[in-house]
Image (tube, rainbow, N blue to C red; front, side, top):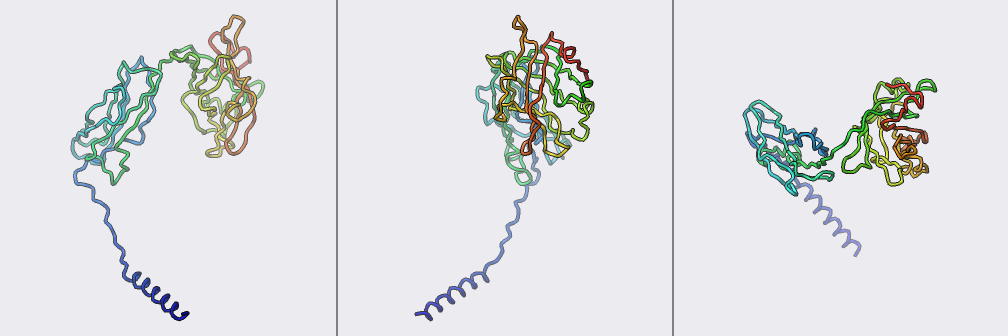
Length: 313
């Protein structure tokens, strides 16, 4: 019986070896790009999230690029999603001879609702997209649009005691534009205050070059407590200059810490807002932090600069 089992095992091994000897590699050639194809696709530089001001033109310019620039060309554009028909989308995008870039203008209608996200999705003609040189998804574009009106409240002072203080005699303020959302007046925003000049003045040389953002957005609840969008804002600082080690200003709740009650509006006896008093926690993700520190954002009519003895940069 044992010899019989050995014979069967040898026979199976021989069969496997014979099968391996007969295997041949088959090289499948890459598909050839059809001659004369336009090779169009949406640029990766296009934003996908847009905020439009209803007092301005409601136009979203999308960059379309192509690889074959020899002749003038038109590429058909089809609509995949346009719920509510809030957008006017051209049926084609045109390239002049020799041009590698064309602009496709998608326009939101003046009747489009404000304060909500309006999605749309469009697609370039498959026959014009080089799916072998570029991912097929480049021929499809998905955008999300919000139409929001902001009311300017004026130029006000912003002071960050952690970032903007060199010493007791050199504390710097940055003037920013304070805006209030028209449809949701509990929401405010300022333009980004952490510019290179103020960071250098506060002696952060070697720590600059961190991530930035266009605005810092604040929300005030019914108890005058303040939170900010995303749970943190960037300070444009890198811990010891290390790449990817952004120092962020976190809301206390985003770090599961106490102190949310200290992020609030301060009013005068008549109920007018004087300033925001905030205590963000400065933290480097995955590394550690510096704890909480004081930030003030003045409202129009309040002299934060004089109250704290700040220098304006």
